[in-house]
Image 1 (tube, one colour):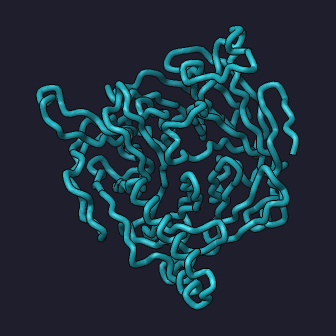
Image 2 (tube, helix red, strand yellow):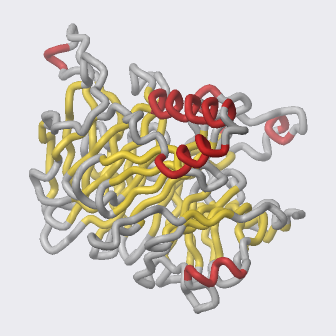
Image 3 (cartoon, one colour):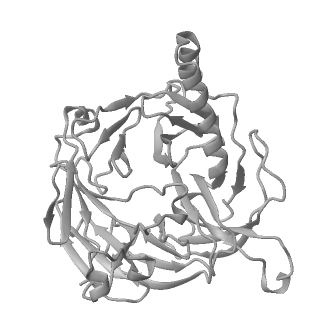
Length: 422
């Protein structure tokens, strides 16, 4: 499909199809984030996954002829188990969809709909699945790639290398017994149930049950312990009782065991209580040094996750949704405008895209204290999306900037925000 540009947006494709009727498509505003919808979305470079309580639909947005796949996980009707989180897991040669359930199970499916892995993380609802990587630099002295599982008062961490190894084994074994129909059927029915992934888990409910959380990175030891080789995971949580709270936990000296884990110790660093304000959603910058937090009073807080200080506040943004993005600066520079010049990371500046559905607008603000650089009117039934982090992309060349996409639920049109900063 040819791309069409409308000044600040470039149309990429359309997802409209009859299969979306099961998810509420056809009703005005069915995808709007302020409509109390239970529809979940996860975006990849070429695919979109949409889920309701019991079904996941995978469809391609760049090719309308690409076959669509419906996945119906085996959920417990007795405990009213439902799908509560979805996310893509993308490696160089492997792409799967991860599903979190209300009973605390983590499921992984192939693009054909085969169950690859099923594992209990903890007894409780999985609220969010976060995939991210941090590169070794002046801020982070250790590189890390992981999947973070967020539950009420609980954070679990799976290492990306463990997931990659498990998936590679599954695909190799599936390929080798391709002609054995019985073995293949058993594999599809049971997944890799005996191949449990090691993980770490922390109890972070000291200030009440969290509604969102994220591991922001690996930090060096405290100032008085600089000679120590110990490093610390730092996590930020938000919830009804504390708008912001932060915790740290020493990185393990031994590899986590492949079993249902007991809680590791998490030390509280700080807490912000401001009744009746409640934290609602959290998004991290690529480096993990900034977090944008929306609250119940219509404010957006920009948190420095290292100093643990709120450095900026926006007001009047109820039900807002935020993503960090990178915009191209120095566009008029001769070298930057040359068709032979590929922009590097230094050519981009970090911005925050804010979707305010009640205002029907998307705003882009330059970080940390810069002005509003963009304002785009959008329809009521739109949702802001961002492709999941791709494992191994820390060393990508040429540099791939962080982009933000807009999905119009009423028309099915998917567009990308243009990354030129005028």
